[in-house]
Structures are given as C-alpha cells and as structure tokens.
Length: 168
Image (cartoon, rainbow, N blue to C red; front, side, top):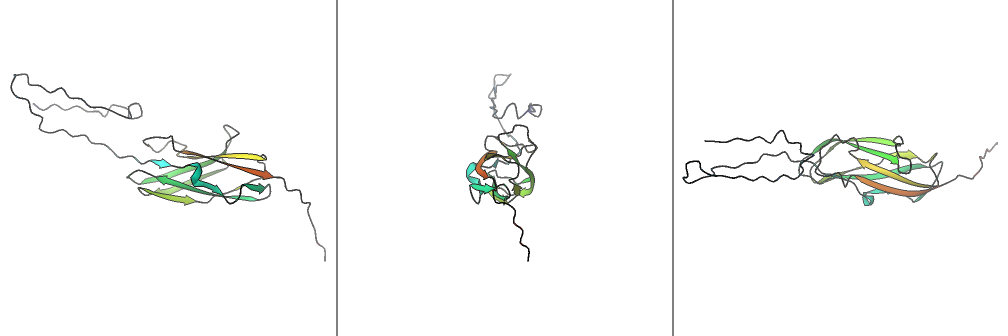
C-alpha cells in the first residue's frame, strides 16, 4: 500500500538542512518498487547587505551637516520579497533607538534596490559607526541571516564657526 508521511510538524528553523532516508522493503518478500518520490518546498528569499553596499559621500562630516546615506539591499534568492525593513542604528550604543527605519516595498528575485535616507549628525560622537540591518524584525524567513548586517564608520567634526549676522 501507499505510505504517506508529513514533515509539516518539523520546525524549519531548527532543521535548516534535512536529509530524507527511506528504508523500502516488501513484507511479502517479493520485489519492492518505489513508484514516486516527491518533496515539495517553498523557495525562500535571501536578503543581503554588506559594508561595500553602504556609503556616505564623505568620511568626514560636520555636526550641522545632514548625512545622505546610500544603501543597496540585494535579494539573492529566486523569489520576490515584500516589505523589507532596513534599520540604521548607532553601533556603539547597544539597544539605542533607530536613527532611521525604512521599508522597501518589494525586491525582485536576483536584483537589488538602492535607498538614500538622510540622517542628522547632531549628537553623534566624533568617531561614529553605524550598524545597518536588513530584516531586523525577522519577519521574513530567509536561508541565512549572516549577511544582513553592514557597518559604516565616519568622523563627525564639531562646527567651530561662530554664527554670523550681516546687517545691511
């Protein structure tokens, strides 16, 4: 007879690589045949950001300057992914509030999306490292999370120029 086994009760996060083994035999001692074997799966997106895909127009800014970041997020998978969150945090202050949170509506398979958020340098220390995380809320199931973080370091100079008022 036909034997059906379901793997739906297995947690994929606990078993990211699963091996299937079948012991096939005949109770009657006659020849054994495997007529059909199938495994169904749902393909996963694979998001990625790296230090090389994050940039700032300069590595030194003044406190009063806006910081225009350029972040490129990749979907290396073969399925599209929707509602990708990107968070920018101060890396040296664990648990700090995000300096900016972004939502990328959709990234097609094997493609990328570039976003350009602007943050303020006000209140940042002289040597600042930003932590940029993709899928920080872990809402999207991926094959791996190892490639979802990037760092960007830059220098923030104090603006020492005094205010100037021209009266005419």
